[in-house]
Length: 223
Image (cartoon, rainbow, N blue to C red; front, side, top):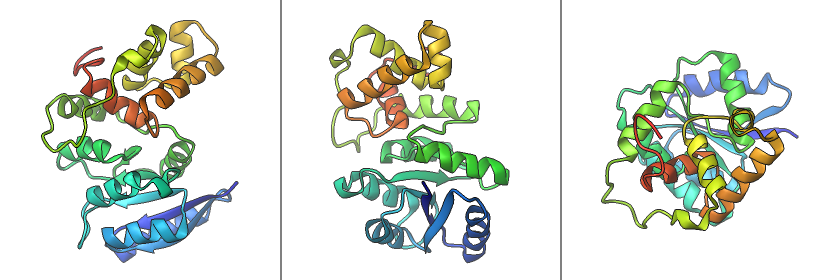
């Protein structure tokens, strides 16, 4: 199946470059372009893209606010947001996670890595590399956020094994890595992850990371 991508960036040249690259892949297709955050939200609703490649700094409505609107819209439950960032402000990483983003990329990323990242996030995985970014996520998510509308879910809805799996997801481990760590099959690891996501109401693995830090299951610098 072709992955439908919406580009959201205020720089037309960058959008054009991304379009040429993405459309060159047989399994990817750019279905629209937005120059502001508000346009990105409107096009996400009208085009039903699978993934929005979202810049942070845009006029009218920034990428973080646009991400929050998209991920909060029940009609757009299947739409993933991959945020573009230069990591100039570390707190952007945590803010984007809280807004519901599924991953982060620097604008200097290698073209092949960009295409792989789009596929990864569209498939429901979280893109939380490089490792340094994980540390930033932990540090900022561990701080109280007075702007949060609701408390994080209670972890007692999870089994002990599911809590262990969520902690490993927050550490950046893939299903294969988790399977190896717990001496189970990758399918079993995936089942545990999916059950935890369902019980906690998480859209994807990135939200599991948010919950793991906000509930104290995982803390910056260690688990």
